[in-house]
Image (cartoon, rainbow, N blue to C red; front, side, top):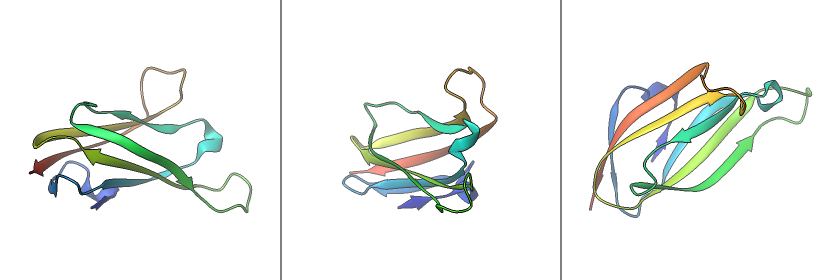
Length: 101
């Protein structure tokens, strides 16, 4: 299943064994990156990749975070776009995912 910014605030259903990919816009040259705030006992982050153009230099792209469900039940998935040294983010992505076994 793939989630995008259009899925923010919603609720989706996934199955155990089905990867959950979150694809969000990001421009790492600004220092802002998506950080994961999720219960690691419920969702395991298995891949974190940035996809973007090589030109023009500094152009925005997409951060793709892939999660693997670890157990059945409701999970609140929260990502915050922030600089590593800052506590507060400038943007949030939150959604609920029901994991079915």
